[in-house]
Image (cartoon, rainbow, N blue to C red; front, side, top):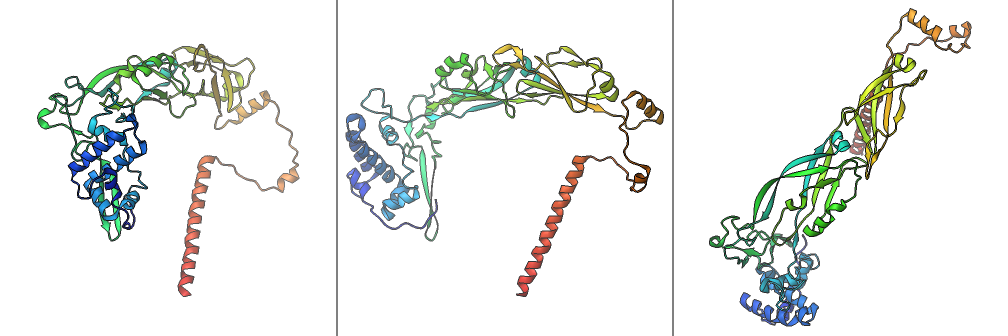
Length: 447
């Protein structure tokens, strides 16, 4: 945070809260804080606000950089540097760094050191439309961190650890830099000596298996069952018991579709990475549907395109469509039926299976395109005129036709044509802006 050097303000209140002189040593501060914190601990009926003030005063005075800034500029400078005092740690965390929890409850206070939340594990799984139609099983080779079995996640041979001297067991450090005249910067970051844990382990006492990291990496193959026709934003009830047991949630979704497939796991939750003193995160499977060369999916429905010749569109057609499950569907028109270009036909119960209704499916829509011949011979034109309905009678007289100008039609791709026109218009507008801008600049220079 940047700002001007703060004005001097009260720089004695924190010493008065702890009951020590300004010349107090770090050991004097520790003794004073321990005595006052035990006396004022809320679990013993003490004043919560007084307990919080003690923790904040000790946090500031036990940090050499914060203490120097407090002695020089006072309390207001710290508040400005921390955004109104927002840099304060949990008072129970500071208390636990001395006693390892509450000394009054046997098992530690519920307000002791808060556990960190582990990161979510996200795996992307590519599936085909056939997989989503039929359901499938995928095998994934996953690796995760597990608590070291040799040291039970302690990281040391003896099972003990020391409070980090670099951060006084808080896991965080504050750096204050002078950027220039009247400018200071204060940054809070995890302690690099203990990696934010607040604890250190001596080299001689490190566990030989995990090297003091408390966890080791484990690799296994996981079977993931992709069930057919599940909707988005639902949870599998069969996993609720395991979710409660392992304390995590599982979400599955398929991007860019209205309907998604859930993933059901055989042995899913035992593969979530574990860390000491960490709340287990969520495991998330993202299903990425591969593009199908023939079918398109929209919710419970399937779409397919088919091109007919002009003869088929007029005289009837039949063709075989291979479905996603390998079945061969015979598609044919009714006698005397004429299929128009850009028309749709639907087949009931041949779309995607519906969620929790395995015997019901959506619709299969067929989009028909009609391919016309590029040209016809005069004989073919004459034959068609005899077969097809007569052309509408022309209302133009020979005199009217003689007075008209004859035109010539040519083929055009309308999308490409409009794109070129838009690009040309943008280029023209840019040139026009440059021309007017240059004229204004010349005019200003003349003035």
